[in-house]
Image 1 (cartoon, one colour):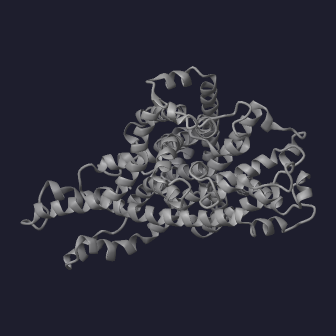
Image 2 (tube, each protein chain N blue to C red):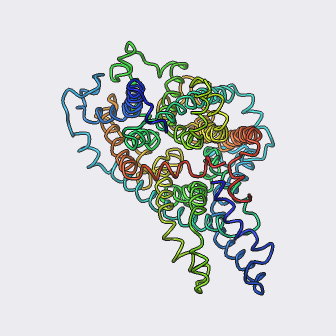
Image 3 (cartoon, chains in turn cyan, red):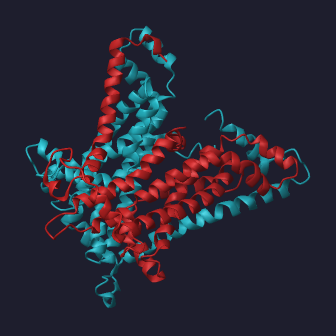
Length: 317
Length: 279
């Protein structure tokens, strides 16, 4: 990519800065180019803003109101009272804790397994296509379908996994249910992690690894001293994607436990407040708090990225 | 690659690793398949394979409007959302890859931000807005947010693809008198088709997979999508869970994914990794 990136810039970059080949119409051409760019970009931007930015602003307003769909006439501006209510509620803190636990464990284990999968995909010589195809199935399968598979597998007297574990009912106890949720998440997301890491892995020159082996390094040393540092950008991007994705976990919990027995995540909690309690004010407050959490995670990662942040190479430079 | 230096033992090791990957990836899917062929009574038999195979569960869901209508909704909403997303994303990605205009990095940042957006944060306000606008429980009530969330994925993937196109051809076309618009539709679009197919698959899979928006913005089977509808299946009596029909429905909605993966494996891998790693 680094060899390709400069190419558009040599043609597109100077267009509005300094003359190209056709001297006289330059400014007209540049203006035309900008106008075309504007019309090409406008619809996409319009849709994205309409569906995200505007509702987000609206959510902020709703979060400052007492607004219950069962008592619409009682709607009233109440400042930050909703935030006080949510932040002093044990449900919120428990949901946040559950979400963080699921995120940390599922992303951490997925990273290790994804690295192993990437190695298998990278080194395997036979049936390359078959292995890649099959490992893509968990990525592609509808999360809800997979969640049902896990749910039935862990149902006592019905499922093979429950039968294998002494006919246990893990979905009815908090810690075990969270473990099952984490397993379901890991199964679903390891292929994506593996493929992102595989792309990073293929950028590590084989010569370098062979040279290290010739110099007497063990496989492990070659991996930790050469492969890992070279893969750092790929690992950070994959971690950012997976962390933010995992933090908004909803489908698996909704199907597996419905958030019962202390397994609610922040997303299922927000959903319950909206659709079961019909409380738009509190629901919006939870939504805004989740948004703030996600923003914090993203900022922490981007600070950690330094110059390797995604997007920094794509447009400007 | 160090191909030649592999010993028999290493070879065996990799083969074993491959086998582990295959088994782990497939077991939950095969379990669904097995459940879907069990007779209603045998669902409470934890053995992995059915003792008696039956197609009754498929016969049941494929003649029931409770599943067929949502399946149609899923296909229709998915295709329309994908089409709009890919068209709008292609336009924007072309501008990003080819034209110089102010605010380009802001646009890329915006797309990335939306791709990372916590969906639940939008459910509450969008629910209220859709009820006001009469979009609640309609196809467009789902298509509009699907397009919005398909766009960042599309813009990101497509601009990565577009940057690898031989743009000299475009210049040649312009030199021959084509306008920028003609250069886009007649010369570049055909070259960009593979990237657009990849993007379309990824966007369609994302729409097909969605559950949160589907259960939040629909209330009847007139617009409920298949993943959301499975929740409402009923068993033979209040005391039996509809395990067999749900498993069969889960298998049916997994089939298109298996077909995509079988035929477009390379493209999907290329698309998934296109924007992400080339730091």
